[in-house]
Image 1 (spheres, rainbow, N blue to C red):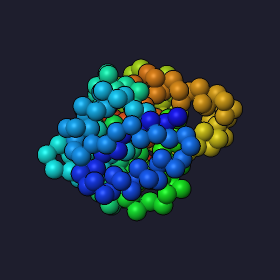
Image 2: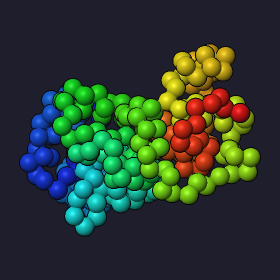
Image 3: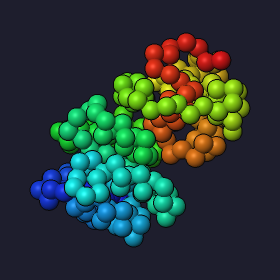
Image 4: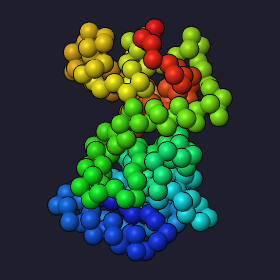
Length: 225
């Protein structure tokens, strides 16, 4: 059973999402919060599997709430799925940098919402890495890159760095395996190690890290080195 905390400053919106989510036999809404500050407190108390987080709220907005939740060790098992009225804006970019595991438009159809919740709960990406990449390429130029020696994160082996680059370029495990001549199972192992070594929650965060660290740059489509 996937436990969910709903966060939105509009009660009517929360009610609508609750009706959709609680029709699913594998989901349970454990609480509702009307602002970011309340969301942070309730996440620590309830430890839900997932927080469905509105971005634009007064006082503590969804970006700051996501940042605090994702940095709190007491909420280590909780993932955040943000909601927005625009698919490519600075708020979504900030939310991904803050630790969100994906984003959805508020007008997403009910079946797609349920699929997204299930995907995030099991650790997969909601927004395809290619979509996340497009978003990051639009905004990454506004922030200075933080690079490690030799241009790749030091905890990673050379092969793991190659896998991270290909994740950031939007390739699936099967596609990465074809590019690097590895089995899909071996790629999955490398992906798991990359996430563990870098302290990342999922593939979306891996894409964010690759761009933020300078390992991948906007417009870079060449083979990893």
